[in-house]
Image (cartoon, rainbow, N blue to C red):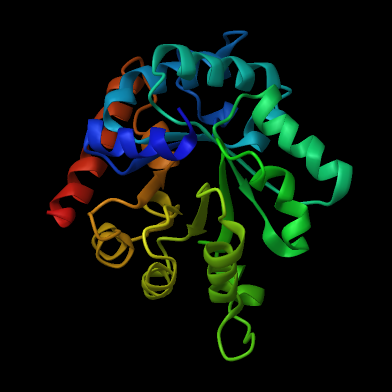
Length: 271
């Protein structure tokens, strides 16, 4: 099953637009795990198994693993998700973007080494920097558009022929880069008006929306401005608010409760 088909299936099967970001911080791991030799893998696997029936996707952040020399844990984690929860897609949050052979190696890293179903990408170097990803029709290509961080507007909001650059990115991806129907965009929950503008230009294209939870994005505004015509179209990503909902032996139950609460909040506004 390709990325888009898996995502649509998960939206319907789990009645959920929640994407759990897997961003392990060693200093914040639950006390019972901190001294264990494979703590990062055990923590993330336990979170996944506790929440798998409540989400539409998982999004491991590569730097959180690489900084701890835990790339093997990331490989095993994605393999575990595919084996134990094969209907759920995995997005590698890597924000790659380069040209030529380097871009091809980045594509191989994400899809062949780690086995991700989709990857986040930076479009700043233009189409040729993403072509090796776009050509993988079964994989998701999730392009940064209007990011959730405060400094995102330094460039993304600049006038580009009568429209801000982020809208030019959205239009270009939707009209020119999406020949295989495998593209999506990143638009932060912290910018609901911009989210509405992007949705108006890209139709039913999926949007990955970080910024709820710890970053303060408003769930009601995200749903009102970002859902597609059929009430789906979003991957609403939350990381810290779910991962670190508890820090004791019951951390998995706490993460499940936080995930369920987010799903319920989203669905109240979808209805």
